[in-house]
Length: 497
Image (cartoon, rainbow, N blue to C red; front, side, top):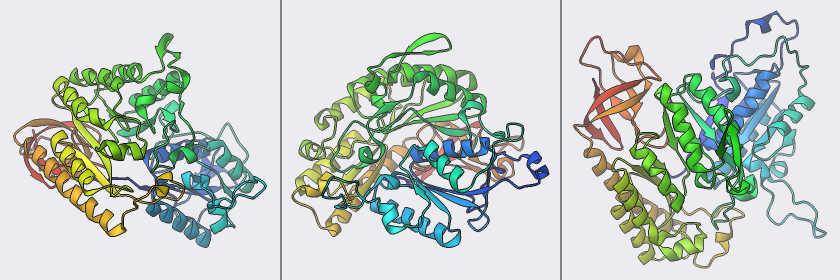
């Protein structure tokens, strides 16, 4: 499935997904006379928000808190929000309201927590009014994203639990990598926070701040813990993966006693070395098309990392890109993509685009459609321009009617799907490595997996048929070889061999 923006909803406490199901049973807890406080947890938004949730849950578990399967059974509820587009804001506010109505004790964190009410700043320069607090004044605390300690401070204040080092453990975690909310065979690795760009349609820098790269030693330490814990696919994420290390001027860090530069190429090279003994995949997301990416593609051709790039192009026409204040030159993207594919013919490119940006003419939109056809984008998503509160693009002249924006989005997706399905049909007859995500009855009835061309939740899947050999089994989290026998929409159909 090709989508333009992913809103992930993970409820820890409001559904049956609990720390116990993540392998976090702690038999010793039943022997404590006073039960540990129980926390309900809802995680909304993108994978970057999910990694924030994982950090908070790891700390909660380390301090002995448990999770609740329902809001009613929780002593306090944490809602990690998303504030990027209007639909995400609405879902976040609705979830906060639901948690307040059912439980009453709610701590809010995430991107929406950083938003303020437009025009609410005091005339004397005082602080603007927080949006969440203005709509839900009874919440206990509100923080922005990437604020584990602030969230824990609020939890300690409203739901205290004395720390007992003999009882408070983190069972089921990936060692130094902590708890993960994804299935155990894949995990997200966040390498930086924030963004230095000021794209006119985006408000993320106002919520997450400027680029802050994690120390390369810490990133590699977490990656090793994940691979050693059984992760078979590591998805590298950030706001701008290509800019990793820019903020620290690519300074030299240390890993296993040797110097390593804080730079994308050295990071990817080191991750590939860590992944190789485990036969694991490394997948790169949010890669801006800078010239520096040219260094990475040969590593893909050599099989060091997956030949897959998630490149947020957003548009193709130079004038639209200038109005967007995009950091990469649209005129050179076709040339750059062609050069990448010369180096690595198996390269799969996924991207997202905006249709109906303010001032977009029919000619500029047709330019975008021609670009998608010529660039042969494997996986493309698109959303109609949304006038997100606080985006400077809203002040540009030529705001298009909502109906026209949606009409152009639909036209874009029709072209994108034609390109994608044609490329999928070319895979029929090929044999591919597939990572198994689901395999009822050990795959005797078939299963679901993904090839190197499919990132979880945003791309297609490989529908695995029942194996012809009775002895052939499929196991979740393991790889299988499969022969592609057909296509269905954005998905492949394959026979395990």
